Amino acid sequence: MAQMKAAKEMKEKMDARPLTLEKLKGKVDLKWFGHAGFKLQFLDAKEIHRNIYIDVWIDNKDCPEEEKKECPNDADLILVTHGQLDHSMHAPFLCMAGKREERKIVCTSEVGTYYELFRKIPPQFIAKMQKGGTKDFGFCKVTMVAADHPSTCVGPQGVQITGGQACGFVVTIPDHNIAIYHAGDTNVFSDMKLIDELYKPNVALLPIGDCLGMGPREAAYAVKNFLPTPEKIIPMHFNSFPVLTGTPEEFEH
Image (cartoon, rainbow, N blue to C red):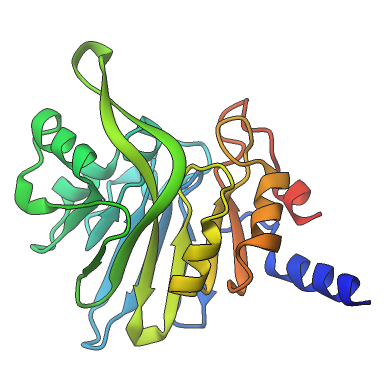
């Protein structure tokens, strides 16, 4: 009976629906941009609309059509988990189209230096971090956490440039008592349990596409064994390329 109850509870956490817009605790909007891209939108304590983009790749087939017509210009923060183009390509466009003076691309030091040198992003728009660190932006706190994946940037003539190590993020929004864990591209690893224990995420965004990272089996294992705290688990990074064969339905079951 205990096992059946645990299995039912885990299934209730997992969301197999294609996500368009999710209201987290009724206060934070989470919009899927396809692939591994998301937008968090909420009002801060000063009633200012805040917008956080994570790994947005506008060219993917699941990105909402309204977002492809014109580059969004409302970013406060643009989080980049690693240098591969399907995660890092559009961060400079979101940044340079932005109208908010304090906007920042948040990334590893190596990816940040790549943006400065090869994408000509002014340093004042880049917040460099490394894993284990937290930055307080006032309206939210961003913690860079571990991920198990390479991080390669593409330089002139297609030359590959090291982007350091891939990462994930925990975005904590104190005004709304919520924390969102974006795992980035990653394999399952036991230190996810530390992320769960330290940061108590309410929501976890996990890759399930297989081949280039976790598949449904690995993601389900992570939920069962390492991530008991999140009330909602949302799959990502699937069906964007032919090799990403994992499906939300497989993940749910």
